[in-house]
Image (cartoon, rainbow, N blue to C red; front, side, top):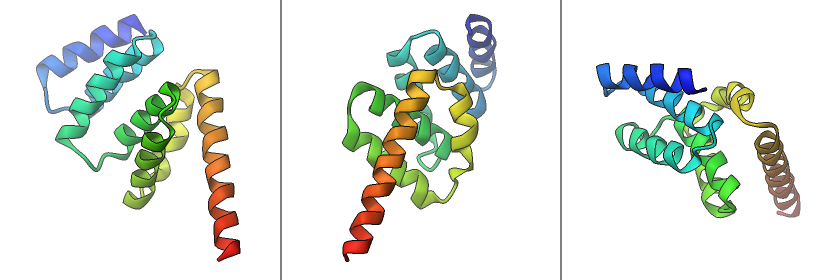
Length: 121
């Protein structure tokens, strides 16, 4: 992760508008345990592209990790509204095991709640 972070940082310096390099940099920071720095970098990337599902999904995980369930839910809803959920499966490979389990459990619970509410309606 440190080597990936250094490479991604250089790529960001070369082209500050390159979203993929910013995401790669944030992923490396996350893997190194620098969650707050990754969060700040993702927020900056989101300000440049507020409809980016890969950024929103990563931010959702970080919010869930911090215990901010409402914020995590809102970010996941935005990913679903955008319609690009294809980013979720590859991101799961990046997440640490405990965070992957957190995201899977949270999404499963929310899906069951939504289905239950629709059945009641």
